[in-house]
Length: 428
Image 1: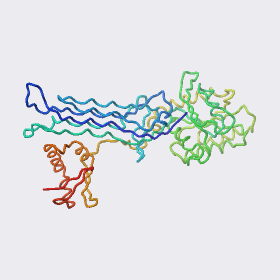
Image 2: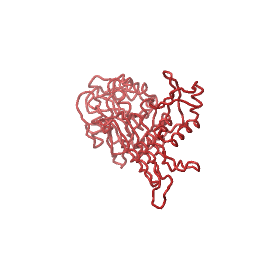
Image 3: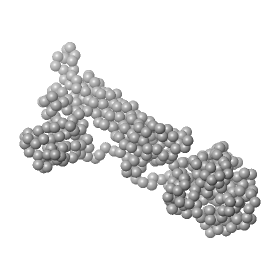
Image 4: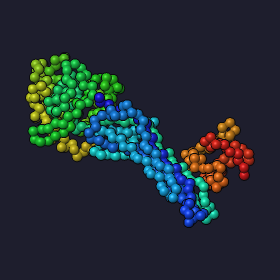
């Protein structure tokens, strides 16, 4: 099954907690602190796998978590880092942050790799808090939480040439003749419901990837019919082969068909509408109005669009078509990276905030409330039964400006302050 869109939730690993430990060797009766640091939490990494062609793997599993870092140990032993989680995606995958829609990564080339969610840093053991006046600190810091976010994965096929045109004009037949791909072929509209890829080998030894995209109808730019599912997959192609039924067997006007398809492309993406096109006038083996081909050539002459009459069924005219396509692709290769696979939006990455000590203070039901990521870590790291640990907690609040902010808000002697479920009374 071809799946080209998925929404998944990612949670990187939490850092391990620092350890509180002391040297206890027989020959060291009053050993100093020896608590090791916690290990770093595992990252969540995305990597391109050229063997993949769909996001099927992400349809049934929606939640992904990397492993946590190990807690620190005694004898200054560090905890083991959590293992990274590697998620493989097909080439052409765009990763977006779900809430904002910003692009986190645009993975197009073989082995492209990006860290999307970073694991939390490990906490520091009590060894780090030894000073000349505090010889035996009985506290350590907790490990940081790993980044957590929901992302959408969107697949845009990476093909050199895209086959476009109305349903039932012979695109699937053409693909099956030119490549080893075996798409479903039948005489009814919307036979192709998913994109098909195939590799074309020319008699001159050249090769390129050809994609048969589902048929287009009017209103597709607004999502009608296969709509955006169709249009998304031709954004990355260097060249478009516009297949038109020249036989007129279904009463279609080839010039009008060409106009309507390009109108849909223009409404969806003007740059896409300007992509080089070659018109493939198919079904020349079927008897029909003799003037259709000349009428089409005349209409496209001013636009300098080449028209190749072919028969996908008999193979007539295909060698000439492929020779021209190969030459055209070589011309376009130089500008492909700049005009086709380009970063349309600013790449957005989750980074640690510049002010990692940010906090907020507000009053709720007469109680002063303090919130912030560093406040949460400080609470987790504090042993409120230990005077040294409590003293360190109070000193951090004072040095980071939390106490001053509370006083600006009106806090006075005896007022209650709440921080993540723990409530204190303020005393000067």
